[in-house]
Length: 318
Image (cartoon, rainbow, N blue to C red; front, side, top):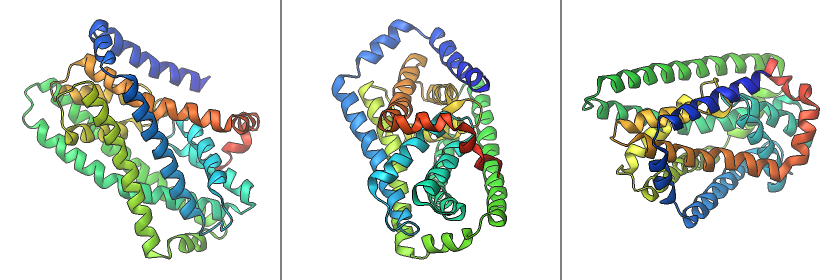
């Protein structure tokens, strides 16, 4: 019931944004994006999914030497589906991955949690410098803005996202401390995974490429929609909006991401209709399409997961 209410709030935000827009202008903007653009975006998103899975396989080999690409892809797809529908800053998906890794390879929780924790850490090490640069870029451009209301909105965004970052760091530190106390072998497995510097550098590079693909998709959409913005602007807008969407308000940040994108793009003189179409298309490719393909790829195991729901959320109480 709670999840249904949260979904409703997210869709309500999007509905309000649509009602405030000129639907005829939105339709005209949407027509600018042809079938070839959608095909390219879908191919790029599938490549992103496979690249992320390759990173997981390379990391997992340190703990589970017999792991296969397809096995990890199944775990990844189920975990992605779970994290997309839980309003918990992606922690729901990580919990599912831990349990699936443990079941698939008959390992202890320490090994599975070590792998998930290291992958998340590497991903965040790549993401937060990019997010910081995005903030600086937005801040510098806000200094020439003339609309004080939008400045106020931007300051609110800065405060909220900074608070979110501090919250995530605090919770992660608290969670890791509990893990060390409760899970045997955690420290040893982390050392095993991170022992090779060259491998760690490779994983960091892979994470940077994965994150870089996000604004590339966004910029491609903006070009197709003939929006007068450059790559740096689109990158900053999408990364800041992504951070805001991490707030555990609605499942997958539905509504919050779209709202943040519109507010930020208006600072660069993009109309609400163009901004909304841009946000909806970007979210379809990077969120709804991923949910759909995850469900299609592993629907039977996802159904079984929900049948055994309690079992899959024990880790959340650790």
